[in-house]
Amino acid sequence: MKRIVFVFLFLVLAILSKSQKLELFYDFNLGIPTATSLRNFHSNLKEQVPLENFKTQDNFNYYYGFTVGARINHNVSIYFNNKVTGAKSSIADYSGYVRITNELIGYSYGLKYEFYKVDFSKGQIRFGAKGFVTRSELILRTESKLFTNSDSEKFEFKSIDFGCGIGINYEYSFMFIIFKAYLDFDIVYGGKISLKENNYDDAYLMDENGDKITTCWSGIKLGIGFSIPLFK
Image 1 (tube, rainbow, N blue to C red):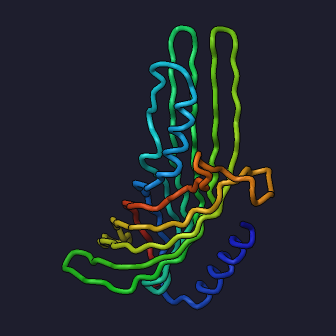
Image 2 (cartoon, rainbow, N blue to C red):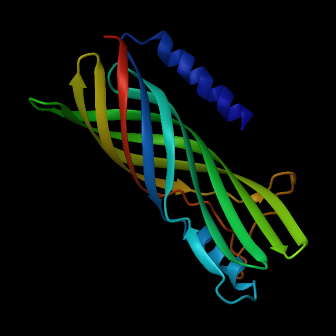
Image 3 (cartoon, rainbow, N blue to C red):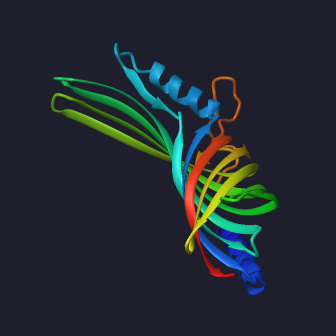
């Protein structure tokens, strides 16, 4: 991952050195992932708890996060994106509680190119394509407390995921700020989810069929944000 960060920073410096126009932007994202593999994984964990009314409150139904970056010469963007999703099943009463949680965090570095735009009297619509690489971290926690006895375990996993996507932006300029709303569709190839402290290639999560479990960030993403032009 350090090599990926180094290459990303090198690209940033190379592009910025040749830029004539520059905008800095910040976005808030909300996505609907197709994390079928992880949903099944959490459901299987829940079924192993022999308790009635052990309910699932969430199971990778959505993710949220933010994006910061720079757009160069009006059509090339470099960015960093952070996103979080998860699953939770639990039961609680007067005697205590039992809880299983899965938290998935993604750190993405990407490059976007906007290849077409349509101008209106109030704003413009832009169409673009992007590619990115994501370092994902999965944190599995099991916690229980029954009367005076308590127990907890934590397992940390990691994976490297590669993705691409297409999107459409609507932008509106007001004074010196550009406001925008956008819709993206991402396709992500999820790598093996392996133990964080284990460097062996064959130590990764598998389902009951022996197939690898992936993060699967693929899906639809909505966002709103703003950008500030520094050089026009």
